[in-house]
Amino acid sequence: MKAKEERRVHARVETDLEVSLRLEDGEEREQLANLSKGGALVRARHLRPGPGTELALDIPVPGSKTTFSILAQVVRVVEATDPVRLDPVLEIHLRFTSVDPAQQEELEGLIDAFLGASGILGREAPRVFRRFIVEFDDRAELERVYAEDISRGGLAIAVESDGVQQGEQVHFVVVHPDSGDRLDHTARVVYVRQGEDGGRRVGLELDPLGDKAEVWEMFIHSLF
Image 1: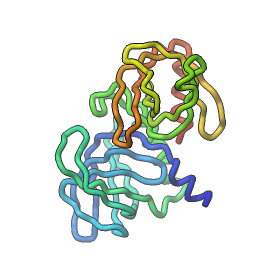
Image 2: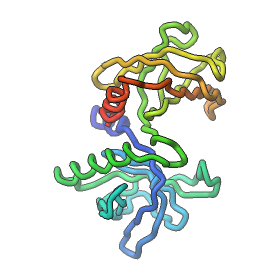
Image 3: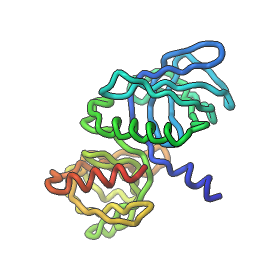
């Protein structure tokens, strides 16, 4: 059970990169949507592999002319709509296989490269997807909620209450899901949206980090 839990909590970094998927019967260029130490999500417009399919994934390294290659297996496929381009895609969920220590080190370096990139989907900083606790000591209706993603510029949280208003300032504390380390800051609410599950999604834009910038970067990197 513990191994299953760990696989599910792998942090994922958002990307929007064209990658190559190599199968026995050919190769196709598709869109890498996110990447973790354990696998990747590819949005495909051409390939239609089924669960269990084995393939090789070639990922260009940001800021370099090199390519990172790794073996993977399809664990799940889902018909979906691209959230930006709004066209139909097949979401291919991949699990990396046969990752030796040298490859693991390369993969961690690749994730670091993505974390340092900008301009992904028009964002100043890429989002990292991992669930962790966020506490609000001055808001009784929030008090303790969960974050869904985080970046150098802000984070998104899931809330049940409708008391949060766009434009207001909030003080919060993020709690590291592994170490329990706590990091506080202030932010402005930039959106409040209804989620598909009926809950609300709130976007927070961080106030200038100043001398907390390095600590914030370390917090994000340590989620992996």
